[in-house]
Length: 151
Image (cartoon, rainbow, N blue to C red; front, side):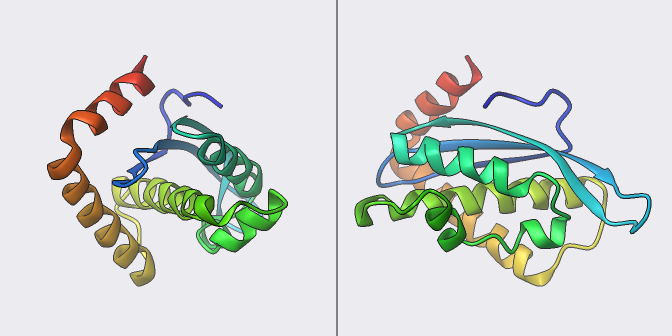
């Protein structure tokens, strides 16, 4: 939990319905043997329910040591099963955690002008569209959640 100062990638997502806001920070290093980009560290800040906090927490454990290609393949199901399950009404938290990771990886790749896989571009566009809708509808609450995360 926490912030990575000078993070290589930051994913910020929120859910219109429940009001959860997640910020995921990643630090990436190149593996000298393979040349692949590896997530060396991941931290999070989550404003939300226990399930939202748990899903982002377990996600940070799941991504550490994975290369970017492996990391973006982590699914909602993998997060949920790693937690031993979630109540059906809380399954959306695992989807939000996956979105936060997608945005962090997208942020990393775009800042460095590296190739962004088509699937990741599609996810980013969907997430951004959802965020814009949420911002219009719940601007006051989203701003409150972000301000709380900033401290």
